[in-house]
Amino acid sequence: MLFITIQELEAAINYWRSQSPARGEELVLSKEAAALAKPYALMIVQGSQRIPIDILDETCKEALAKFLAVRNSL
Image 1: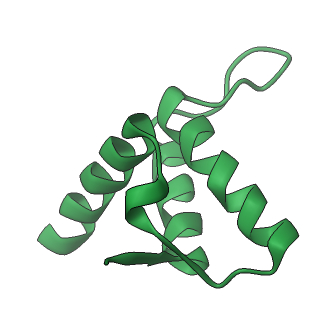
Image 2: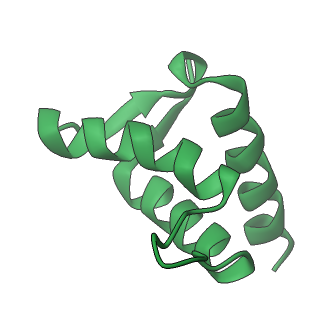
Image 3: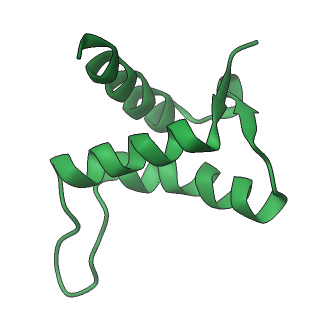
């Protein structure tokens, strides 16, 4: 089973926020950043340092995979 750390999840959120900044007066996050923010918030509340990737929803997995591909190509 593969895991994602809270630090990696935070980096992925920051990546998507830089690619598509929050918009409007409500500062709405992009689809990718919003998807990643949900498990990130749960990890903070639960005090988790890592979670299994397979429990993430498809939108979150796709956003994470794209971020990791970009990060690994640098």
